[in-house]
Image (tube, rainbow over all chains, first blue to last red; front, side, top):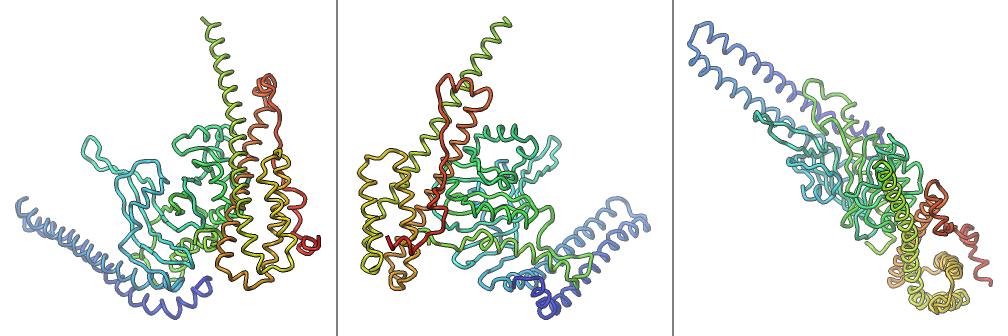
Amino acid sequence: MKTIEELRAYYETDLLPTLTVLDRARKKVLLGLFVGIVISVIAPIIALYFSFGSVVLMAICFPVWIGVIIYLSISTGKYKKSFKVGIIEQIVRAIDPNLSYDASKAVNKSHFTHSELFKKSWNEYKGDDYVQGMVGKTSLEFSEVHAQHVSTDSEGRRQASTVFKGLFLVADFNKSFQGKTFVLPDTAEKLFGSIGSMLQSWNAARGELVKMEDVAFEKEFVVYGDDQIEARYILSTSLMERILAYKKKSNRPVRLSFIGNNVHVAISYKKSLFEPRIFRSLLNFRPIQEYFEDLSLAIDLVEDLNLNTRIWTKD
Amino acid sequence: MVIGIIVAVVLLSFAFMYNGLVRKKNQVENVFASMDAMLKKRTDLIPNLVSAVQQYMQHERETLNELTEMRAKAVSGQLSADEKIALQNQFSRALGGIMVAVENYPDLKADQNFIQLQSSLNEVEEQISAARRAYNAAVTSYNNAIEMLPTNILASMMSYQRKNVFEISEAERKNVDVKGLFKQ
């Protein structure tokens, strides 16, 4: 399945029946939520009406509130899970039957660390919607990832700042190499022109600045690497064009790193990915199209970067 | 006091500019050496290639001989940088011709030994092209430093000369003319 037309046909024939069932489940969740809120509000009112003392008030209200919260989290969890198995997994398989999907797993933390894409430190790593498999000759895995730096301030309050949120992909690269090469969004040069470029060359943490001859590419990205020639060996003129096109297609910040014969790609998103709607009907093509586009963006990486071309010594 | 600071700043900036120029010059030489190593790697693949294809290719004998001769010349080590580049350009042309001619020999195309060799050659070609781009980038940065203010003043004092970037030769820019290649 490649096009929106194909998706629409698939939606009509295969997804709609499941969605209809799921929408009933959604309404149940919503009803549960409504009833839960009503009970939570009514419990203290009743207690006040009979003018119980504050100890009794708390003794009645707390268990009720906790019960409501537990019930709601179980029912939404169930709903989410059946949605992911019934819809997201089906879309993944329809795009490429060779791929497997696991709603609760994420790309291994070690890959994220190994990619060295984010210099800011993080201590909490979460993710879900893990897809993995071979696309042609290339192995690919990706998931939604949320890496944060969590700390507690002087008053013991939890403070979290996001280091990365979005899709994180790891694919086998089609050429072998030894060093590290980074392709990062070019903020300094965009803002400060040639002075920005000079500032970039002083960013020693990433290795040497590699100036590429492709002007359009240089405008969007900045390249660092520990070997000037190897960086250009990896980033052939055609791959630069492809990366640029991929960035335009995604319309989001894209970062790449080439380390240990793999290419790591981080695509930033603001929203949470592949989550079901709760307050609005599921029987709508728009959200399905969105899931499909986000999944396709990830799966098409192999084709978009031409990773199945294996004409070099690496198989 | 003020004069002292001014002198210190002037001296320091001279030192920075001087070091920058030297670094850029060395970078050019360094990349040229890497490129040379990759060209040599390609040259070393020639005997293997010739022995792998000659039993199949009956009509391209001359080109194969030519390749062998070119290789002998290349490894003799008595070439200037310009001659080296010219010879390597001839290599590129002859190799390109052989690779196109391979299409006429299905048995050869299926030969495992040859397939492996072809990947090695592709890889080396890609590395050479990367090295060439790196060389041009290094030369451009060097030339900019030599011609732009304020480093140009220092560069002329150090008698640094402009260097030429690599250009793809006229022969390489044209599509490979296989027929012409084998008529020679």
